[in-house]
Image 1 (cartoon, helix red, strand yellow):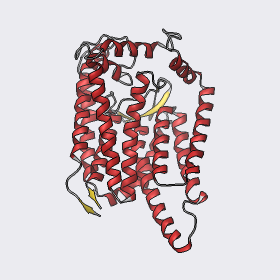
Image 2 (image 1 turned 180 degrees about the vertical axis):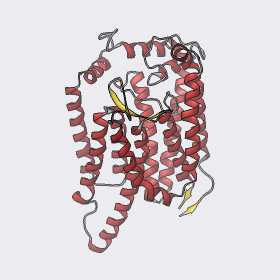
Image 3 (image 1 turned 30 degrees about the horizontal axis):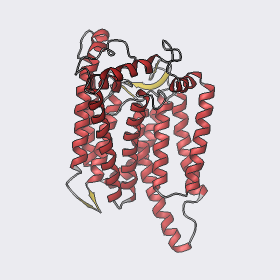
Length: 376
């Protein structure tokens, strides 16, 4: 495989635009929260710049320059290291418990969230493993005319790997991240042209597991109740979605103008995190919200086009995985804020506050731009 030194400039422009959108939105939204909590309106923004944008751009550039062959080699060690980090969140003194969730590692000067890193390492490994397995089974088929993708040699290991990772995320608990990783992994598996019954079996098992989780966790059931009736308990379980819809509705067509949101002054919970789209739509209106959604739409187009144009199986599957993850997460975040989907506690890519998440998302785009340089 030769290397085309010109990356996909449309994708590059989209990524830069999303990053600029993120800075603009967070600057506007974070001021009141930052002032109240830290005594300065710029602390949150500076933290995001220092622990999100800066390492993200550095490691993203490295990811852009690394040879594809090297990425294949480090896929398994990277995943194993990430699994160790997932286990460490449960170790007292190392892991951090915030609001009943053990998702962070305390590094002293900062914290990291291993489940965010998993979105890269797992998809990287999955693409490398499936590509290698596909190549091996294709050769076997040519010689022995055997059935491709055998149950015990392919499907069972996939379910086992996904189940192991799912167990770590369940006990943190981080069901939203589990959903994103699970759906994206299934998309990669399906795109690899595996037997369709296997995909439907996993979907059916996933739905059954989700219903079981909801049954034993009342707060998750409450989110579905609010989805169908936002008037239920408006000062309790329905409060956040009610305030989010008020914010979005107040924005109208052109918004209340940048910095003029009322909801960010303590009315909307998680205004700098999961609910940041509602504040943005309030300030920039339908037009601003549509532009942001359109950027994610173009990102999806370019990402899947990159996968389609590449004949290398690993590069194809990696591009599909990275693109699906970012677009799916954006859709789920915006969908939960507009009451298309239940609230999920998922950050909006490139926009929501969170250093580890932003860093990982930039690295993912560095990898995708790297793949776009590959010319078959």
